[in-house]
Image (cartoon, rainbow, N blue to C red; front, side, top):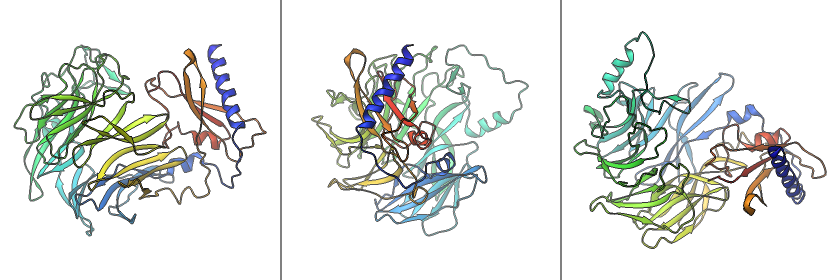
Length: 495
């Protein structure tokens, strides 16, 4: 009964908001499921060292062949786009990186290739024994992630995988048996580095996590969640969950640094804090590391606060500790005096700049959802942006505040296609709190008519709906195009 009444309340609030919105006429066709799944999807921007060009992946589903293709484009600052790898159905050209201003690299069929921007042919730089991901290049070394067995190299892991076992049984003596749809296995994601000389691999790969406590224990799963490498190619920072007999409950997730040449031991920066660490980011000079930290243990949805650690002295300080918002990602300014942070607020993921010394904040974007923020030169930014009625594209934000899109990857496909914008509303909920939500109207909406209601409820509960264009079943425009008034509520407990 409670659920029915609550749903009815949402329905009445939605209709009252709709009646207050003027009707618009649309001479467009609905967004059907086939078109939706065939839309282009772009990856994060990868800025060239001289800040004049940007690499990004573009992928889409091919219905006739029942497969997808992913290829790499380059866009300059004027918005001119060139496709620089092949596009083949069922194949992926991914993980774009820069080797220098005119040479880029990518993963294809688990080989790392190197290719000039003006060249059609590529050369193989590295052929690892097993799958790798998250490849970066710094000062003659590659850093990447690979899942290996305890005490095993990439080549040894390949041999162990090839052994035909008579059964697939596993015995677990800790409670982290399964995470979502993944069974915990003896293979662990680890951070590796390998040296390059004349664009060829020299020697063997180095496992940078080997010296972590109990890393070799096959029953203890180290969970490598994130990593980053400083510009100088000296150190990597990574996020891992500290081993415990009951890892399914612990939130003791720490941030470490380690030399990428394999000569030093991992160093814990978040010592004494048992909450979750995330989003590590090196300063331009490599001396400082910023990260996000939840202080409260056993709570995955606590407020994330900004911390900065001095890698020379070991001192750690909080930044903007009075802020009542929870950042999601961090990026240092070129001069090292401030941090750019993406922050969820009222359904938008906005970019803020935070002064490290004073903690003062300034909001740089206002609507929609920003992600994958990168520096472009000394003061400009590039990032991926979308809104409820606008799919993802790469945008440039100048230091003057001027902003424009560098890509429009779905402009042709969505010509004359209806995409409704979000209409925000609020109502008084439990404990007299103000609850925020929005609705999307169907095509050719007529306020004098009645429409069915689709209420899309997010999971979590420590998540939230956002003004963004998602490529999943939660996209409100799919329901709106099917004739529903579509409502999304950020109920109590939303982040």
